Length: 253
Length: 253
Image (cartoon, rainbow over all chains, first blue to last red; front, side, top):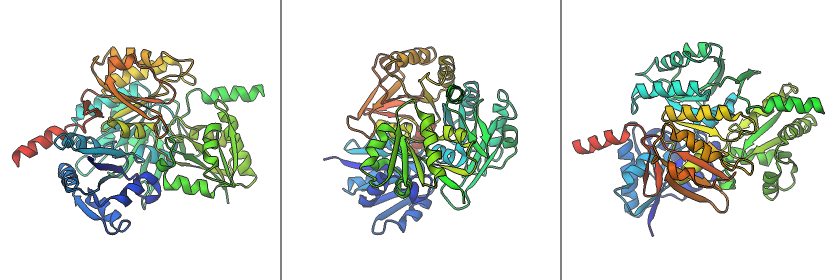
């Protein structure tokens, strides 16, 4: 029978926000592989496991560790923060897995920052939305710009991942400038820092204000669509025509 | 102290795919409110709770039930499939909640079909993506068309929710026709039916083939971006330039 490697989404950080399935799979694994920081967090929760880690930017090496352990007959889980299939390691595992045809891969979905951040802000993604990463480490900036333009033209609610880092301090400002070409200054926005960890921060603001805010690598940014409102400090995107229709129903009653 | 209503995402269906947090909150609730079908599913898992339900299209009534029970001092949870903040009840609760200023609302994120369907297909959302509902029950079709066009122009991976229903049998075909204006016939696509339930089905195909496929209300559809490939029957969207860079690193070694 083929060996199988599980690629497990851990959600935003706290064990409470992991699925039952993810916890069961980690419990049954003999080897857990991941980014150094996450492996440190997991060590205490899963004693007796072989824990292997590689630092940031050594993602390919991390994947190869999984296949090597699996070839030894070990039950292996690779962990990623959020959802392993959303800016995570899943696609790289499938690419590298071409060289290991006897090993099956299975992704276990986790809560991504779009979901967990939205829950903290209210309901900013309650209609059609786009998710865009501002990191140009693997994507040319021109493609990111093109997607920001398209998202604005389509009147999507927008989630921005990786809005800033040490080397890209002004990227959120640059993204806001692109959006401001076709979206009004006062558009309702919000952002969340350190979701599911100590120091969680939740803020709402206008798009113009967002342009001047400081983001870091633990920030997730939300830009509303044309119908999004800030209600009692929460960022709320309506379900299309729901509200108008509901109001009519109330009047009829 | 203010009462608080929890708006809980149940994920795709199986209890395994719920978060710890969601299960704990349902365990501590006295009243659980939801769509008739979900409440039936939950009844066996949480004996001793007051279970209240309303059928489909009675969403406002369902929200009001929550506030009425909360005003009586009960601990209330409203359950939604997937993530309550993604095409779920969260925003309607905040709207109706304006009339109940003493009641706090808190959304508990769940696994949405974009995540759970992607995990079954491989890694179709491993780069920037859009989520679009084809239901024109609450959104004019023209706006849906505009978003499909924008998503194609932006070269996003695309997830389609509600691709079909009894009254909208040809909507997936219509959406494919719009996408085919700017996307090639052979674009890699896939779809998933009955995620996390009996009868789960996972298929990959080209965009042209997708146009002729039958979808139902339990189908979630994925359209790749220009770099998406079908690898061993899995739909894989690369992390930007990752692969090219990795290959170079290998050669240097």
